[in-house]
Image 1 (cartoon, rainbow, N blue to C red):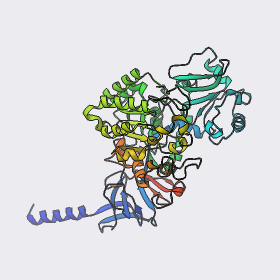
Image 2: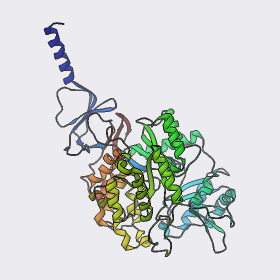
Image 3: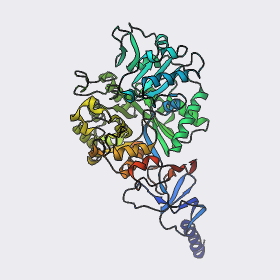
Image 4: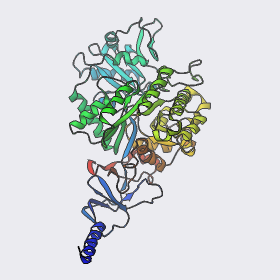
Length: 547
């Protein structure tokens, strides 16, 4: 080849390299990239499943097949939810909802009306009741027995750590006055020793073990309902967890949704830590999934919840002297599970709320991680009531605080009754975690709390409790900025799931997962953040939701 041809060939290559094709160019936008040190942009272009340009001035070589003027709308990366009971949430959407109930009478009336819509023998499930809504009196089977004679009932408290069962359900499970409390659980009894119908902690397994399994079609209906809601709220990826080991695992359900081609939302699915061997075998056989559906993590409980008084503390509960909460699993056995899962290369996500539970988990993680801890992306789920020392240690070790900010404005209505004023300053310590250099991620814990990220952002920046008793913020010194909350929902969440090279910020080469919002959450009054709507939602460059 002569010199002229070589030069000509080189010029042709240079011309091609200057041209960037894009399927769609979005202009006149307020683009929050989430990337450190980068100012706002006004243009984002995508081609197929990737971002090909983010900037202000559209380069001449950018060739777009379609241009969309966004009229100044706010654009950001899609939200990631760090902790969602996805299938339980879908099941709740298809079942009775007891969250609006504010009196025992309403509880009975709603249960009676719902039972009339069901055939005999069908279980009444989910519910998500909150006894704090009617003054703190715990429900009793006598509230519902007369209106559910033909339907067994198992309805959970909103935190998932207590449940109400009717007499028919107790009989089917073989629970009576002679049934011993299981380890890590309580069968609540009246003054005569008879079960009241209320179960706590691991006692829930007595019912879970006898519940009939839903069909594949029922599961796919529940999946679709959960996904539809999540996409409408701008959630592009979920860390899906479950409390309940079973033969049909949650991962099987997600794989079925993927196989049936109804899965649009990205998911990382964790297996209950008790089943770590099954999780390890699955990784060995199938690797860790793909960019839509990934796995290779385990999630376990060391304690329960503050609402159910099953969170594990060093000092006794203020409203129950001599009682410290409890570990839901034998600590020695749990430490072995953590060690085995870690040795198998699985990622650890451990539920710990009380300061003693948190310290236990941090100590075990420190032992397991040694010099590699920051690479392991270990997570403590909830991290609600740590000590100041635990906050410092979390940051030093690089363990991730996987928190759900809505709980702060809910629990803040009554938490002081449980733990007293001395332990309050570090409750839901969002700002302290960041100031110590810790890693903070956000999510919902749906259906325990609302799925909406906008509710979570509102909670994190205002800390205004649901009873309006703290308009300036409950433990106001722990409030954070909107941008810090957005970062926790996107950038840090992607890091926590080993996604930071592909997702989390709006940058060239990353997946085109982004949302167009009705308003800039940084620019509206805080009380209006919850009113923001998702106008468009793209995953992999595909429009998956439009308002």
